[in-house]
Image (cartoon, rainbow, N blue to C red; front, side):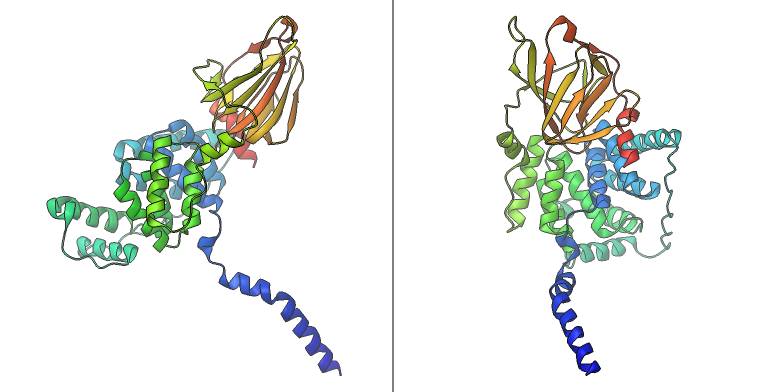
Length: 385
């Protein structure tokens, strides 16, 4: 009887857990969203490639916070030089050096990480590169055609240096190198054949089509509109997976109020759109505006004689009162800025943020603009997460 009871309990457990066990066994790594590590590789590669050093600073903080080692982060930047050139990668390395100094000064100790395993000397590097390329593409390398036949020199440089020297370095996996490559090619634009080829290679290395869509989405608010439209077009040509509507188009349609106009504002860092909902006049005692910050954009330090109310309607951002920690704000939050208290607000490094700002337009409600929010102050939010 005891044996039958145990058997009954065992079968009950099996039936209850079977769906979950099967699901876990059939789930593929590529079916999952990009990990923080993968996202950091994407953003670091993209901003290194297009030379956007302000956004690269934020991406590097995020990479180190995601526990990429210093050597792994350097490797992403060095990898990009094969696609964007030495000057971009050198500027990226200089930016990383500055970020590491900032973090060290703030008491953050980042892990240097392992060194690359020495590559055995000797052997035919051209053949090594050919074999690596065959592993990446799944196709044998036959006679030279196209630009390789036209310029055997570049074919040799590609195989001996890129696919033998660089891809043999074991600080990043093939899949991680393809993430960096796809992000870099999207960011620089105008290289559709190469982007198409590397998207296919990325899929072969275990990056799912949904993860490629996520890369395009991540970069959608941070690189040029033309570059993102091109990436969407190339993805559509190699994939049967339907892309969602363009992020910018979807965002604009979902906004409660119009986005407004952007322009040079000496009291802002980055691109900011403003749409006046209630204009200043002799009757109304409050002015109301819809303000949208691109990723990384923020106000300078400032205060209001009568205080200010912020209604966050979209995205994720930061708000900080002078002397207090940064708080993360997001859609649905209501922020009450006390009178005469110095503060700033803006978007997070990777997502835009929109809020409605309500301010008194009388003399006793005017704003006092102060100094710029430094990168170190802005990136303090990354350090505490």
